[in-house]
Image 1 (cartoon, rainbow, N blue to C red):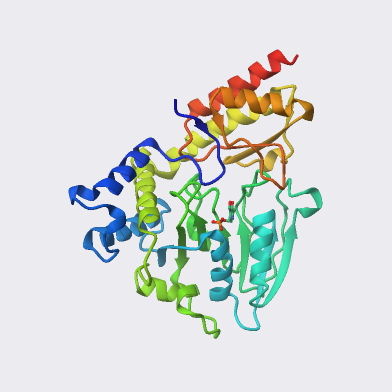
Image 2: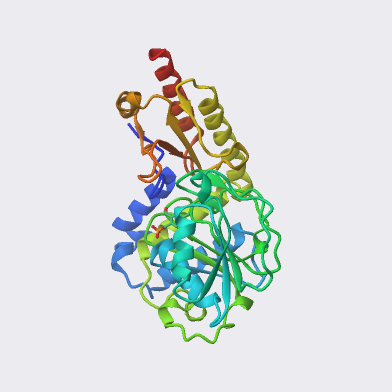
Amino acid sequence: MKMHNFSSGPSILPPEVLQKASEAVLNFNNSGLSLIEISHRDPSFVEIMNSARNLALELLNLENKGYSALLLQGGASLEFVRAASNLLKVDGKAGYINTGNWANNAQNEAAYFGEVVEVASSKDKNYNYIPKNIVVPNDLDYLHITTNNTIYGTQFKDFPETVVPLVCDMSSDIFSRNLDFSKFGLIYACAQKNAGTSGVNLIVVKNELLNKTTRSIPNIMNYKKHIERESMYNTPSVFSVYVSYLSMKWLKDLGGIPAAERRNLAKANLMYSEIDRNSLFYGTAAVEDRSTMNATFFLKDEKLTTAFDELCLIKGIYGLKGHRTAGGYRASIYNALPMTSVQKLVEVMQYFEEINF
Ligand SMILES: Cc1ncc(COP(=O)(O)O)c(C=O)c1O
């Protein structure tokens, strides 16, 4: 039996992607070779890399708009550093909105490169809301936002009005909803939620923002260098790039971001209506800021934890445990998670209520 996988990342992948990825490990394109034992300079892999980069721009509707896409290693945590080292000028200033642990980490890493201003924060209420009416200073090199707070389950629905470039960590909601992506100067995301598996980051950057700092940037950290080398400055994580390529192709075949958004809204609505209805559970994220990707909830009576965990296990539900810093439960309902898995979880929550009433 296939488990219902609510893991927050690495997370569920579409069955078609798993099938094709495993075939490629055994016999890539009927070449008699494995994908992971050929050179990354082999034309067949170069084509995968180029197609993946093009697909990312196509899905985000950023083709021919002055953006480049890269697939690089190091996790989103490396992008915290790479973004700041490329965009924060020597003697410059960057603004950060602190809406969760990851946003906070991004902010702390940027401070190694220059002055960082915390423009707004929701730390006062344990990151359970998104700050509103944010006034962004005009003298920033950029404003950094984490669009979706994977840990506490909040998500920006609107973005602050600003004249400075918007830099976004979209690790946990990229490709999940329709946005005007040309609003953003730099988008980055680790792949292991909505864009493939761990081992690769997707970076989409507006070319005109690069080369504005006088800082010397080591090649491996330099977006410009990676663009010149078409994301092949050094050996890419070939398997992860291939899984990203397959995941993006799956999304395109599904109908692209608009289709994913419709599915995601339906799943999130069902999930949150059960959290609100069920007398045993409650949510803590501000209702208007609730994430469509990570629904967090808690048991009113913590003594029921073991019983609920055991029931989930028996019913084939995996990965529901909340982040270690947040506790409770978190249903990650990324693009690849089918509606039937949310229906199953809701059914289990209802049954649990019945037997504990
Ligand atoms: C929003 C966000 N940013 C950054 C990260 C860190 O990603 P990585 O572990 O790939 O460095 C995560 C991980 O879950 C995340 O959810």
